[in-house]
Length: 95
Image 1 (cartoon, rainbow, N blue to C red):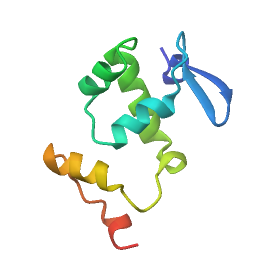
Image 2 (cartoon, rainbow, N blue to C red):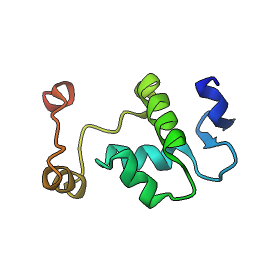
Image 3 (tube, one colour):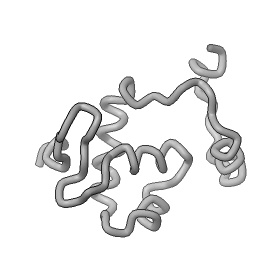
């Protein structure tokens, strides 16, 4: 199965998981907030880990489109620090 087979490309800014009304941006939002794939599954139980990993893989292959603005919100940062998943992106840290 090709990676793109997991998605319905409705518009360039509206890509959804096949068989769901959930957009990939919903999964990406959780992922960028520091959620693990298993935690995303808890938040979006109609998905399965295979589909969540497909979205994450798609994100990493196309991350130039999904890179958030330079700033990380305080809530996101505190969650990442609490979970000890804080990683410094040196490119954005010095920008």
